[in-house]
Length: 141
Image (cartoon, rainbow, N blue to C red):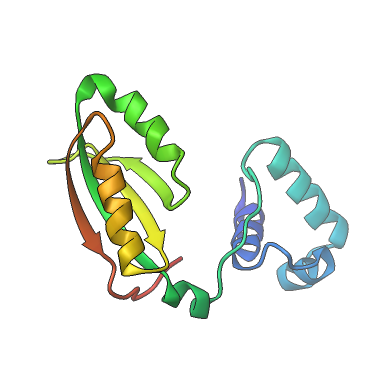
């Protein structure tokens, strides 16, 4: 990847629906250059897909939390599969430290958050959870 590829990825990260012609103007290259770069980045697996970002109004209405999870070592794979089935679990990361995993979760209500945390804690193989509700996002990239 060169500087143009990185600038193109940054532009697509800002708005993946931006028309190719607008990207070309923004990056000061031809439209065909942008198209071929995008195609190459997709073929190489650098771009794995496209997604949406919720508006800040919608995002502010959601309650988000990080749930640190301690897992019985022999049941880690099963726990990961169970967590993957829960749509409110938006991401799951293996971490170092006192816990084994950290789940990023979101719900629409505190009652939903409470029920979700209980559901996670009840999964066979999970030994302990610690939850941190996200109060405010200072910035996000």
